[in-house]
Image 1: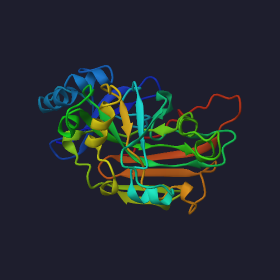
Image 2: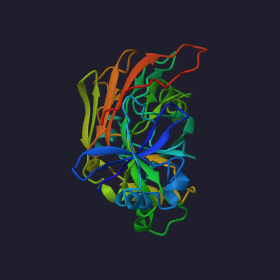
Image 3: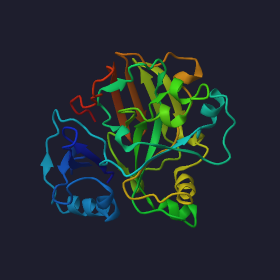
Length: 304
């Protein structure tokens, strides 16, 4: 049985749920309130996936309606969001970079996490806001100085879709160009719609796609990744402690606006991202006003 963990409700008030098939094969939502208050590091580290399977098999989780509810990020605000750059061969080429011999690592603020369907703000002065469809890793066990890639694989709780939104003028050109500036903007890490357990999906050959206003942009496969998820977790563990609930976004394939082949995101644009087996995101973009709080909490109906 493939599970899909989700968090439903208004921002800051999400309730934990799991999507699973019933006896007829139909997908239904079940509340996880009997097992946990939230889908977070504590739940993942304490065998939450296995406890959920057991409770479902025993019929202990009540079915719920998700009609009209907002879908939040599938894990509560993580302690860290770690990102990997230039991790697809073709994307490195379109960026004019040599494929890296070791992972390129940077950090994103945890307050960049947004729901997968939330309205997404373009910074007030931005002219080069860009999409990046990425496979996200969610950590399930503490990872520190791991001895092997095999050990690292056991620290992965599951996977999700992420969009690593990037302001290229802030990130790259001139002496002031810095990755942190270009990758830390409000709402710039939409995550979800689901967290799929690592035991339920193989990530070595998944199709990734991005559409902008219905037109194809990215269409690639995780088989083009330079460093696979377990290798990334092992590498990062040599330099930092990864804790349960932490998120790692693993790089994007070719087809971004930075390539020069496509225009950057404009107000009113709709960007859709999908990874095979992990679901689909959809964001509508608006221009944030200087001095205004950049809300990313627009409610939408669930589509799965």
